[in-house]
Image (cartoon, rainbow, N blue to C red; front, side, top):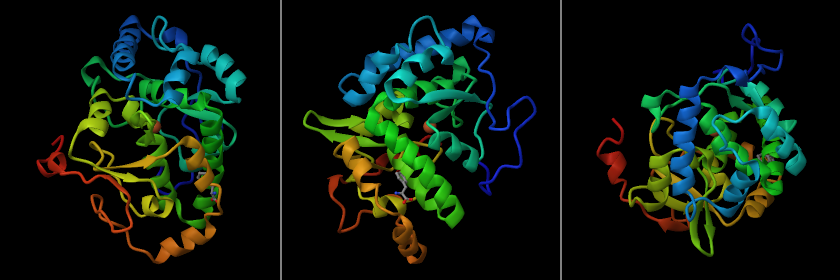
Length: 288
Ligand code: PHE
Ligand code: FE
């Protein structure tokens, strides 16, 4: 996403809405092999860690086969299930373009795949993060509606100058959300399920805080883009997430304009604390 939120225009070769052809025929066998390696690692790790909605979506789309999925094939099934589709883009797109796609039930996905020496971490979203991480949840009808509503909400927040607050909602739900189920904590965030190390850290490590999701609280909490999260927010269900985000955010934004941010690892007296993390990982310097 760009700094000012509005696009100047698509790069050469891209359409006005920044989409490009996936060029599926052009992936090399080495690139397909990266997908297969990542897929097999996560498929083995995620049962009992990812939520049922994610695992069901993964099965329904059959994203494995012989390598990097062809968007044309995914879209047949995704369209039928929830009316969503995946479109290829060159990389991060401007905020207004991104929101317009979501508001029209299109998910913009990176077309490139990480190199074999980046299996565990890269900062920019590649096709494995975007497709393996995000698309299975889009097969769930309630989550599919939430993502479209987020796109509309994004357009509105951009106009109101409150995008910094709304982006935190996306970060702590769509990207790094956890869910509390009768079987225990489960992952639904794409940034977690697409990462082997964070799929373990987010659930098992004593370092991060795990706190019951509360909309305004989340919007006041900064996040980090360069390492494991220091706090995860836990929803009871996708239905609940959808229900609490239905309300008009206008008054909420007004209140936030005067409120200060919380510390990233702060715990407040109003929090429902599931884990009061040690923060040992961050304190010892994390990835650095
Ligand atoms: N209800 C929000 C608003 O009034 C829109 C929204 C819905 C934002 C769902 C995020 C997720 O702006
Ligand atoms: Fe993502």
